[in-house]
Length: 105
Image (cartoon, rainbow, N blue to C red):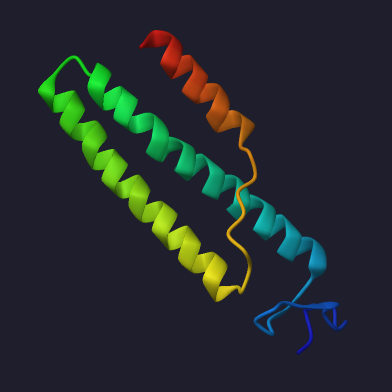
């Protein structure tokens, strides 16, 4: 299997996909980052639900929590499909947003 430049890919994943190593690592780094962010939200959103000032806001955040739990589940499936361990990489951006939110609450 050749890429567009005609050279052979240099890396075979655990699932036998042939990919460029740098692109695979970039992809995995992003997935790990997102996995951390989604798991962090699963922990943070219940605090926001308790602090909500209206039933409509609480309901909306509850819906978001349900969706976020689904994201975590799907990311775990991605790790499984790639035969990679589901390891999170701290997402500084999400942590910063979370701290700002906690300061308001």
